[in-house]
Image 1 (cartoon, rainbow, N blue to C red):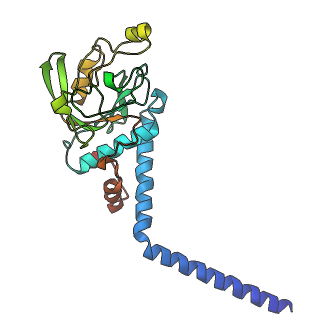
Image 2: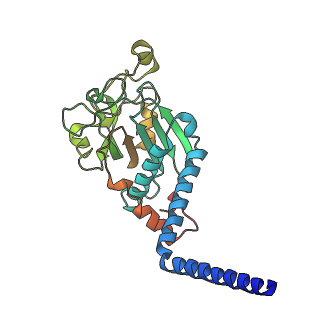
Length: 261
């Protein structure tokens, strides 16, 4: 009786192990592409997380999900050859934050360093202390969300300024026509915050303090990525699609590095 029990137990164990092994082998064989994509996704997330931690971005108030969007867009723009080969600078503006906060970050993705964290203005038409309305319409005096390329420098009514080219149709591609540029503005300062409880507002430009204007312009000019985030569920962008980056990583999961794109 005892011998029969062990025979039955062994047979059940062997059959179960065989079925599990067969199912695992079949899943790996048939779903290899899916597994590869999952691995690529994990690698991409880990890479972004490492950048975020290395640059100590959490300590300065940049939300991880906003940074993740910005890096995804940067990667897609790099893959589409919209950027110079050595372009490593990413500017993130988060208009979901109060204008009292330093809500612009300039990051060197290759050296994994935060270069500057400072105040930045939103448009008068977008709101008071908080920006809650966005538009690409001329004369709206509202800020526009999305991805831009920070391009060339010129001297205008605000002095030395930097042109922005919008990359998201329907959201910011009228930037040139609207003269949406990075420029200095005296109302972007701690003194203004102390007097009014917020910084001043622009006609839609991401204006910065005169104290850092040249530093900002000199750092981001020459076709670098400039991303403006905000609370608007209608905003969409092809540059937030992870398909391109994940396919690139899946082709070689051993050495993903933005510097090699």
